[in-house]
Image (cartoon, rainbow, N blue to C red; front, side, top):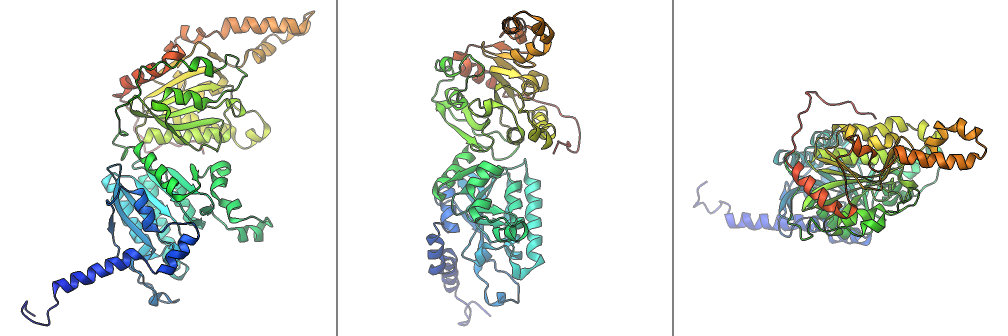
Length: 524
């Protein structure tokens, strides 16, 4: 057939056909499906991608992909995209890869072609060294495709594990996620959820009731608030998709593209040498009096802005991303307002995971210490406070990023050691003049050391008070640790921001040599 042959296809006709096909794919299956999605208070997959990425930057790949399964009615239903949209674009001008389940097509259920599209975009993200964001809204494995659908999840899990600590992985839960599908978000660095519309669980309410007799709703079993406050699976929970996706963009602005880069540095408008006079009044001198550590964080960081992670789970410890002097830092801080700031099982695991994330992505760590110890109790011991508390110790000991600790007030016992003390590798350790570093509080220590003397005294209570006073003066004065080289300096609270900024600047070129090993074996 020659170009002059009247039967030869016209290129313009082919282009017109292609444009029509693309428009059909862009619109989705039908208006009824879109209306149904909107009626549930949910956006479509493409609307979500438009909110996530910079305007006009999305490049879609494999939009014409269709499944090849037969039987169970699938041969007559072969929509383009196969229920997942994949591609890349930019967020604040930096490349981000994304895949989004389209609930309008097979309920977003995963089949062979669907999984292969996700596998390819994950491979591209890892090869390009750029973050991967998944917009999850799917009904699990496609039952009609049987085991081939299940094996598709295995490929996703394997890639999640391979990319862990190499590129940031963010899961945004915008609908149901049940069964084995829930393990992919659990393998990623951050999980976002939206109230009322998103759920995550391994077995649904019907199965739970059949097996255990417990009656529970979808939201009560695996809703956003449950995972943000009780289980700790979700790092963030929001009321609507628009706010949620905007916060994903903010998080991405605080993260590097991959583990070979550092997070973006901005020119701070907030002077690094700004005096922090309010700190003199924020922290009470009395070790038993509570205060909100968040106000201390706000005073120290640039413009008082920070992104708190796991805000509602294990609230006795705060973990957050912020900037000091324009440089992104990870902040770990005890929260005296909740359980007096003690470390317990959940707080230890929360802080440990955050420390590991910061270390993986070259984010310096600033630890603000005001800790009375580990939470005592039979429940804590029987549920593994030793094993699980050791996770935080392991994370700090392995971290090679710049590490600065600041003791605001009390730091007692093993919790002092675990909260990034000099002995576990902190590069710089500072304290305010209100610090008390000791094996335990003065009253407890005096009761142990001088119990016979107190018991034999004519006035036991007066004797106990005097001995507590002597113990404090001898072993718990603010300069005891500094005199023995356990602190680099005792700093004026007003100068805290300047000291931290200058220390971070000095540590920017820190290099750490690691022993050769396949990987460590952390406590589980």
